[in-house]
Picture 1 (cartoon, one colour):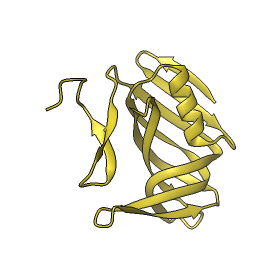
Picture 2 (tube, one colour):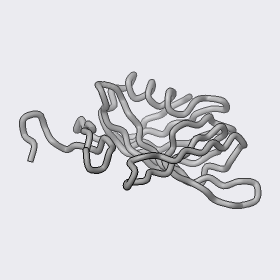
Picture 3 (cartoon, one colour):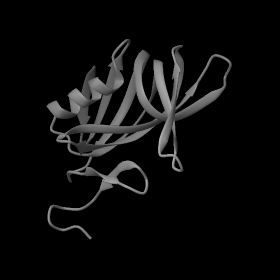
Length: 146
């Protein structure tokens, strides 16, 4: 992976066969990132996507081993259990020009992955929401929750 900063924005390039999440998490930790927004394009493989069912509080998961065009990658960074945590959704396209997407659990870079990252100054964390069944973003400051 290579990264360059321009003003307040980072531009990242992940290379063929790099694991998306471990690479991004290591970069965020090394650069002291506490929160932010990312978007990207490129190509992925060995992708695992999910669809969350609120009623059952369960993800259906599906693996896509083949190379796919990364049509859209959109997500955020926060801190979870003291470490950088990326929550990413994606839309992929196959060789038949069909699109599919969902919550991104894992992926490898197939060709390249070009990501724009805009860091935020605030440390944002996640807190478990019993009714939803997931850890949701929390904008509470320590001792100042509404």
